[in-house]
Length: 334
Image (tube, rainbow, N blue to C red; front, side):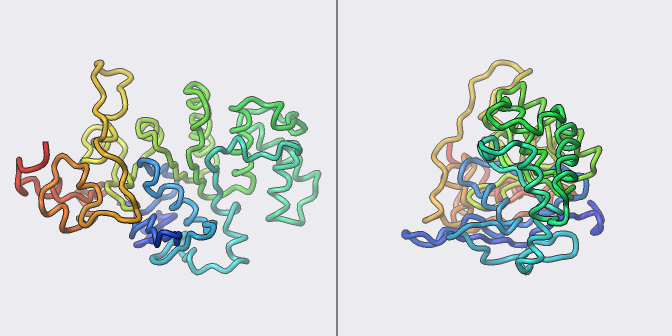
């Protein structure tokens, strides 16, 4: 387990609610985890599990009607939930930056990629001259594998993979300590996807930043990340080393996600699709939120929510059955 000084980001019982016409929705429910310096931590889960909401909460960029309603977000020794606007301006992009979903569409079509990088730098460092900003833009493009002279190119003149690299260059413009990547390669083919992730891994080693990598693609995450957290219904179901989750997942939901993806190098097998639909956060079930879909569920699962419990120094799981296999063995649903 890492020493406290090695912990870069830490959440403690973080809660995020949305107020809607139909009532309050708790999208993130008492989520706690740590991210260490130099680490790649993944967050996986189906759509609606709370991944993107959590990412936006970490940067305090939740738009209405989303509100942080409980818990803490510690970045080094500071509580992000208590930062004022001036502190947040210095925090965002200079210490933590983000590559959003559909990032290729985030670029301004009527502005050159160089100007967009310069604008980002000057927004946080107004004293930076345009010439210095363009020089930095050339350096960043070269870092992400694009010819520096493409600073004068417009987004439509670049391929999808190149536009994605530009967005990553923008995120790295101010040398952040933490890079949050929310579904950064979803719209790309698998070859370009692999190239970009390899480039990001190289940049991480060269520049020394940490990564929070968010995706619904668990096999991809297991290749790229050191540790993985699995969210279900806004709660952390399992958190552990990528290799451990791949070879021996301890939560039935993690197991179901793994079985839902085909093996590239293993024998051909029929996929085992997760039964049932994702829960409605307007009316979540009592007890364990996964129990209506769980093949191991017993009475206690519908009555008590299992706490996230440490199995080893780096592996935690929230599951009555997995923590106590003798609990009504054989009485689960077929």
